[in-house]
Length: 216
Length: 216
DNA sequence: CAAATAGTTTCAGCCAATGAAATAATGATG
DNA sequence: CATCATTATTTCATTGGCTGAAACTATTTG
Image (cartoon, rainbow over all chains, first blue to last red; front, top):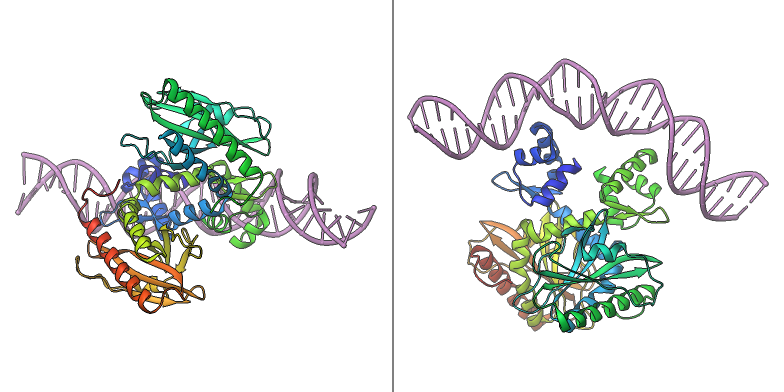
């Protein structure tokens, strides 16, 4: 049942048989489940009989995004992400841990013609990635300058990541990740980017610690 | 099971007993379900034992938001929402239907000090609301000027809504909704707002029909 | 410290979910 | 147009897993 939800959500648009196969269920069972999920609004079925996520699902997700535990995080981080874009001209993301993966949950996009986009909602392994190193970092005492992790081509060739952890209550809560083309993120620019990422990660951490005015 | 998911997602943060009560389940059953959902990453349990939505959920939601059936809609509508804010100085929303409710799935915020915010992810009844009238409107032929529906105080006192349907493939797919304080949305301003909403709803409909350049 | 409240474990009983198979609808192919 | 292949849907006898009362533990409160 949840497998089916997963399948549909991650595939985007699936037929009954495809979904059943992926979820490893007989079609009759899959059909029943898909129907149930559709009735509840979690999924929708278009005129061709293909399933995709429905309004109830999107709604819950959006609501939780504004209220749930990540709300404080995203609110605290968003201005930082935008500053980071201003400072580096590359795209900035906020990532959290999900089991053995890191998931990007919000972004501010670079305004350059060539830029990194569309990774919000995407997960990448912690293993072998800069964001993984940052999220698994030992939490530094609040207020100290965070370590910055860099990596090129771990997920996609020619993409360089510059990442630093955000800490709160003695835990690494999230990571600020700057992503851009490898040829733009090298030498002096890379060095500046690393500085900026560290600055912002620290700032966001402090922001989380003391719920001051800032935000909207 | 899905009831529990709903409960947690809509409440934001709940204890076992509270969730069990809301979902009308014995605590033992609720516990089992909550654990399962937690293991799957749909929910998380904080140190105080309270449940809230988890990273997997947020992730799926965000991903579907970028890929699923609403992606075209939100992409097509976003520039329109922003134009609407420029033209009217009020907050603009995009809403879709979910059973007997309308759900706001994206927004562009007014830049005035007093403004309507935070309804993304929120559902309101179709019954008795302007957005409801718009979503239940008979679909007009593509290209014709959409009817505009207005209402004050249906959900919250002193909030005026100005809404027009977005049509595609002979169906009302969504609605463009402008929300602001009643005292600012009256007389001449209201009239202008209605014009602007109609313009934009039409533009978005045309946009959906012909996947032209525009968007990012 | 007692008493109430919240969370967790256990387990026998039973019912609701299961999936094989048959049927209908759809759509490819010669 | 007939035939075959694929996909969707319905049916129903069977049983495994889910259920929830009860007992127990942990935590909070007065």
